[in-house]
Amino acid sequence: VIKQVYSEIIVNVGSVPHPMDKDHYIEWVEIIINGKTYRQFLNPGDSPVARFQIQSQPGEKIIARAYCNLHGLWKSA
Image 1 (cartoon, rainbow, N blue to C red):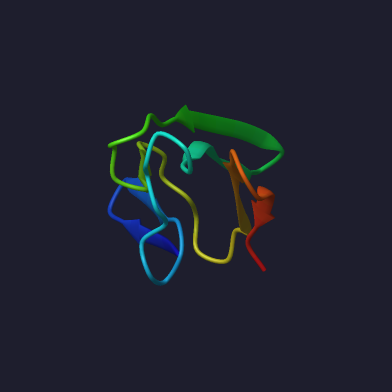
Image 2 (image 1 turned 135 degrees about the vertical axis):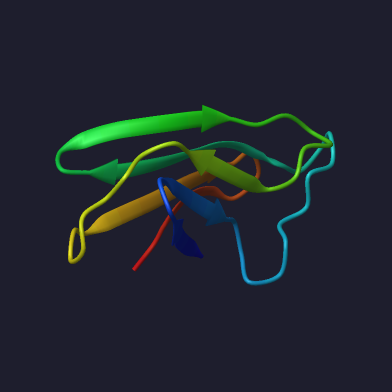
C-alpha cells in the first residue's frame, strides 16, 4: 500500500502487515519514481513499513517493490 503524506512516501507491505520474524521477513522495500530508485533495508523485528522523504507531483506514477526472504519479489500494481 503506497501513501503520500506531505513530503513523505509511505509503503506498507501488505494490507495485513507482513511477518517480520527472523525466518520470514521483508529484506528491503524500494520505490521507483521518475526513473530513480530509492531503497530501504529492513531487519527482522522491524515494522514492514518503509518511509521515503520524497515529494512526488500529482499524477506521477510510483512503483513499489518489496523482497521477502521466503517468497521473493513483490511489485505494486
